Image (tube, one colour):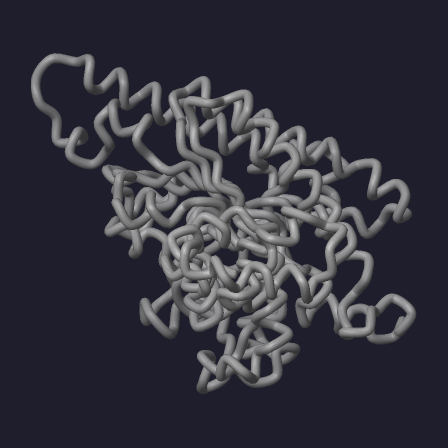
Amino acid sequence: LSFSLDHCFFYVFAKMNKRKSVQKKLMAFSGVRKLLLTMVIVVSLKGASALVDPLFGSLNSKRFSAIFNFGDSYSDTGSASATFDRIPYPCGMTFFGKPSGRLCDGRLVIDFLAEKLGLPYLSSYLDAMEAEFKYGANFAVSGSTIKPVDGELYAQAANPLSLDIQLLQFRQFKQRVDELYKQDGTSMLKSRVPKPKVFSKALYTIDIGSNDIILLNDNSQDQAYNLLPELVNYISQAIEKLHQLGARSFLIHNIGPLGCLPNSIENSNSYPEKLDESGCVKFYNEMSQEFNRLLKEKVSELRIKFQDSSLFYVDMFSAKYTLIRDANQYGFTDPLGYCCKDCKKYYIPLWMKHISNTTANYKACNGPSKYVSWDGLHFTEAANHWLANRIFDTSPQATL
């Protein structure tokens, strides 16, 4: 995944003539190497190994005036915590110094994206205490799925606020903003919400699907594979609905290597036949990769359909796999370890807990920045920061 300039040239020239030997192609190509220096950025972004499509110019120009995010716990900045039961300390210990509604010791990738765009951190749409939506809103909620939640999914602990509900929340939010600005006179509320014209200039981020893949574990592999196209179609429908509502710029994350998460591996340690040569759970990673393949194809189709829009595909699988595989190289300790051992106690979904008057007292390690995983399922702030830099850095080599 770490490509040099020569790798980029090799990729282009290999495309030109597949029948010639690699050595001859490189030798022939070296003569015009300097002439193609200006093509490096284009090559790196168009190449199959690019972590994100041509996003860097857009981010650098800061043309996005707001972010509207849809997703699960990897980008939830407070929805589940505000709606059900507050996510307790030590979550938030590193950056916020208090519980922040995030399943992390600090900031998430979505927070670092906001920083890179020069925007404030996104307020959760469901958090009444800290509502500030002038620069966007976050509809993501922990435990959410792509597939609409029915009785069966709810019994498997899926959050009822699935992607379709998040879209309904956004539609209502936009409708009420439009109504507000049609009213005569001034209102203090107008200072806390975006102007109607902002919706078409905002970045719409979608980071969801991990819970769907995890819940497929109860199916046979053939059954699971057959269900993946349906999940991708739901995301496609979501993008189409957002486009109808005026969205024109989309950032779509694929699913990371769920089989390499410490929690997945711990649950399968008694079944070595379920692990691959890297020690990761085969089922989860194979499902993630197939889902990602289908999602990338669908994004390509939607680009053709919506030529007035920009759809950016983010390869989170490659970024996270690189981080986990080469953790020591990047200054992290055992990638299969995690900082907050006690945090597993809140793995019981907040929306399925009994109300209790007791205060949780969880303990975490002293140095979360040395860990890739915060709690066995989610990433530390240090890991999220690394991922954000890996994905959104404007340097061509850093994006491969």
